[in-house]
Image (cartoon, rainbow, N blue to C red; front, side, top):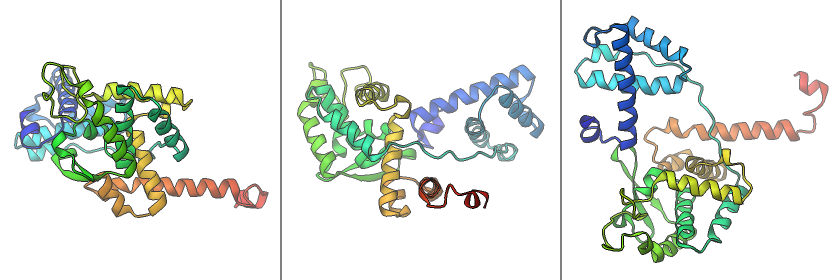
Length: 292
């Protein structure tokens, strides 16, 4: 775990997940009488079967394999790591909100003039107008803020610039006026975080923002199942790509190291186009069109 933190520079959430995955694998090996020093391809296939029988999805299975593979590489057992074959997964299209739904959320959030409401509006604005992840947003420190951009620290410790739009800059300015409300009264400068908190961690948590976002969705009469911080990011990406069609620009804005990750948003546009043609083409409902 120290290696993942210091040398791989992985996020705390990823490290925790890998730790749980390795614990589960160790339990399986113990129960099956498997010596991990002499593990075989058949043992890994047995573990794969075990996960499948316990309804673990292919995506979650591959994450577990990634943790295990990394562990054996750490032990200088590269040949053992190569025995772990990943599963094929169907790429899910991201769920996103319409521009009307996003505007409704932003308008409703801006109507709350209490300190907590102003904070919710500021976080929501940075997620949508900047396309940042919620963990990146809540990790922003005061020193990261410049006049027209914010330095974002993403996965693997990589940094990028998130540019402030007129809307997000205005929301941030309003929040900075009430920020002292969230600082511990004994030490008004005791937190380096932009979105600070009087809690033990010293910063606003994503769990608390998620609760605030759900309440906001309820007020807007938007299905709460469509709402999450990451779906706000999906909405940003989908809306930007639909407007510009520039996949490289979107890759840079999202902080994706591999463009194949960004290309999922091209599939969203293709699906939308297909549905539009099926719904509105003048011959879409004709017998000949349907058969062909």
